[in-house]
Image (cartoon, rainbow, N blue to C red; front, side, top):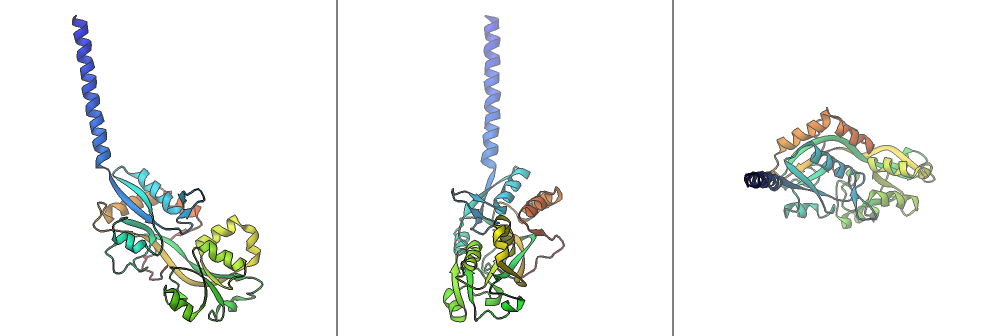
Amino acid sequence: MRLAIIINLLFCLVIHFSGIAMANTLSAVQLKSIIRVGGYQFAPYVNLKEDGRYTGLTLDLINALNQIQQEISFEFVSTSIEYRYKAYEAGRFEMIMFENPHWGWEKFDTAFIPLHIHDGEIFIALKEKAKDPEFFEQLKDKTLALVKGYHYRFAHFETDPVKLENEFKVVFVNSNKASIETILRKRAEVAPVTISYLNYYLATNPHEQQRLFVSNQWDQHYYHGILLNPNSQLSPEKLNLWLNQLQQNGKLQELVRQYGLELVIEHSANSKHVH
């Protein structure tokens, strides 16, 4: 009888402490805040695969931030380049990576956390058309492949399709990949292409490299960063702390190198070139 009582007491104690542990675990999960990170198709930062999965540097950086701390769960939310402003304003996401406050965000309340990642647009054409760099000096007499919604310096950062068509001969496309393929298919003569994506494309399609003339003339240079809603549960200081940790442990440099990009820590990230 006494043994049975002791066993019952031990069983009750096990159930009691298991319940406390489970409650603590559930409480920790419930207390973990979710920060939604917006992103649009823009390889190599965000790339939509044929099976519907999103990959790219944005997704890799989200995973790295989730692994380095236990306070915040970062979750990816898809949007589009044209509607990302409305989605942010509507609260669909609180944060967006590889942006700049000068890229159409001036009227929105945002905090900017620099990533110091260098990128930009460079002009390409077919070698059979472009014999030397002077080919790119006059663009108004050539058919241009432009990604709809992108801001280009040579076009004074105008994005209105009607205004662009009034000033240039334009073929509008929906991605950097389409810009390159439009040139290869001879549907346009010149395209400004993001250098990070051009490097990626030529690495995966090396047979096309001999057909393309890549200008040494850049349309623009810029340095990427993160835009965060100041009213978010995550402070810019805390996010910057975690990014510094990723930099110090070498993870950020590792990810950046994988995508053929350059991390320039000493840069002030004050570039007003836009995309």
